[in-house]
Picture (cartoon, rainbow, N blue to C red):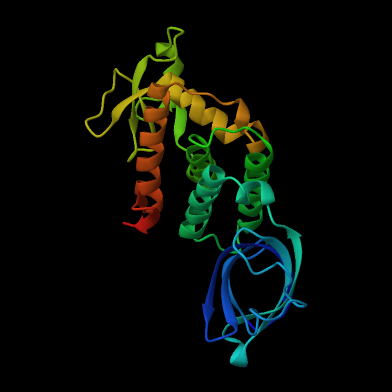
Length: 254
């Protein structure tokens, strides 16, 4: 931890300890989530002008404390404050949900860059586009989870290997099953007492999310039934494979 570095980071959380000192939780582009201290940060307008607030993108120069056991913010340069999100309470609530998920997943140095890029593009899309605030947390959670190598099999039955599309009669609502434990679809012929009802339409939505980028998300629409199916499966999948469940406004380890 002792080496100094300069890196682009998004501020996730900020808190104060002692009279003028501030602690920050940062998501660094190349390092993942780290905690760093800005000593005298509440009074320093020259070193940290506009940088020590949640939902701020900045370039920070980071050193280390005594014995190299903790990070110390030396200075920061503001890059973007996302004013279009800060001024919209509904969008700000969606942002908070996404940031909490990133923090809960505990992204380390490996894979941090791709998640950082996904998060920034998500924030930019939400700020500048009319994306559904009801759908965005679901889409973001599914996309990040799948990009971590945890994408379920949504084309073949995980028991017999038969293409799931053989049951498709064209409406998108043909029933199949989804097994969280097995990590994919189970066809009607196989059946599985551990699986739950699903539809090929919902499976196609999840395939689309996996292949998409945030800039494309405003195009996605779902009826109430597809939204319920998709949301239920994504929540159960995240709980089973990442050990995270959304409860009382935060993600809890289970």
